[in-house]
Image (tube, rainbow over all chains, first blue to last red; front, side):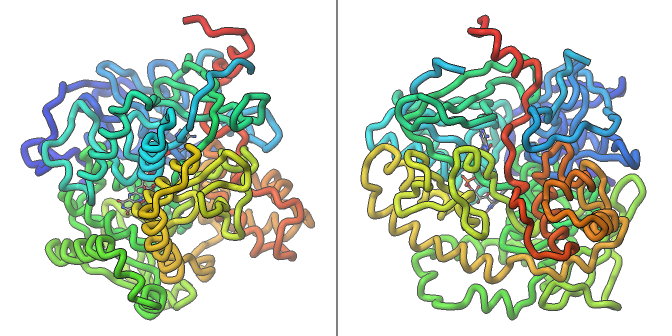
Length: 121
Length: 477
Ligand SMILES: Cc1cc2nc3c(=O)[nH]c(=O)nc-3n(C[C@H](O)[C@H](O)[C@H](O)COP(=O)(O)OP(=O)(O)OC[C@H]3O[C@@H](n4cnc5c(N)ncnc54)[C@H](O)[C@@H]3O)c2cc1C
Ligand code: FES
């Protein structure tokens, strides 16, 4: 088995009911709740990974969960490099898995290129 | 960019330290701007469900949640306080601005979306309260899906009500493993065991000296006792002197190897055992988020925390620091430091109560590192093909052979030739580990160019289009 969202009926925290939403990842549908992050929706549906790495082509999903590691990035509604653990899900969000050629090194004195501009690609 | 907005005391980070700083500055009569990259206040400690799903019994997941709610209501409800959420500070630069002499550049908007609203603030004084993130040491297989940091497990349990797996091992070092295990168990997973690298002897020696000093920190001790009773309730074994030395699986983690460690954290051959899991949560320490402090020119101590004086002022006038960036000491210390910093930033003498609390809890920081700090024997659980830099997928063998074959003595050139630490996370995850391993593999014991991996001129990722638009004059509405 795998990661799962705690069913509201069994949750001692009693979260306020919020609207059900659906997002797609490469066309496949995943159900979640308003207020979840996109990573929360995917993990909560049992999906553990959604990116393949540049060198080894190995799968990645959430690692740090707080926006630091960038393992969880994917394309969201046409914009690349979105950290799914930080982005709140909106009903109808369309996600695509990302597989990139090796990224350009970021060096101390170089201009900032931590993410590329989705609009430019 | 010129013509920023003048603000009074600017508090960067709305975790325990930042909230306490904002409160103290407001109490002192200052105008305050409190901002956080996240769309909620509370920081890592009080991460909670979003408003849409607010939990009726959310306090169950937290220690001192009522304290958070009171602090939040006090700060957010004050007309003299502007709260900017979803607002990441991406750079701090010296400028001709009055007051602190710094311009603070902020991007507000949906996370990683183009067309963020860019603004520039010119504060009278700055309180840096940017916190820390988990430091997880590499081990074979740590890149497999299903391997999480302890912080991720916390964030998912508290902020999403998602449990990371059904059979979970929690491992690493330090008291932080306790709340991680508790929230994983509370989320309905079975915590098979908690594995702490240090042995009982060191933990006792680290925590025990001058025990009367802990008296002032009874609440903290009570919190620890709470975890122990939770462990008993959930029947979670707590093993000391052991570590997860490998994770196994092809597309996801299916098992881990746990080995006993000697006192220096070196795995003891023949003690390995394999445990089936579907998730493992590993944290060995915390790394302070120092980018803004470094950009502002604040000095760091030899352990690489921000140096502050009695009023929490850094070596740069008008720039104060509080919370985990000045040392890893837990929530109470973070709040006491915040209260001192906020008052001082507003030009007032900090309250004696805050100064006393800071003294009581600063004791904790020293005990934590004496009892749980990382020991170098962990290098021995690495193999040549163990990935060290997750972004660039640089293996330990390549790192060592490059370090040995080049006579490069600078971190910068070693990074360029190995590519380690140059990926999209900008070395946040592996930076300190890469430095430590390169030092161990190089002839000298110190990098001549002293370029630290903590230095990142751009703090938060910005889309090139958004940066380019800054040159286009005033923003269109
Ligand atoms: C994921 C995680 C979970 C934790 N859970 C626990 C726990 O359960 N129990 C425990 O005892 N300790 C926990 N800790 C340790 C915890 O860090 C401290 O106890 C406490 O939260 C420290 O408070 P702080 O205010 O210094 O930092 P934080 O709480 O980390 O707050 C810092 C804030 O600054 C913001 N920030 C950082 N950089 C920027 C920027 N450039 N622009 C805008 N905002 C920025 C961050 O978004 C964050 O909200 C956790 C740590 C982590 C990383
Ligand atoms: S999981 Fe690390 S950035 Fe999202």
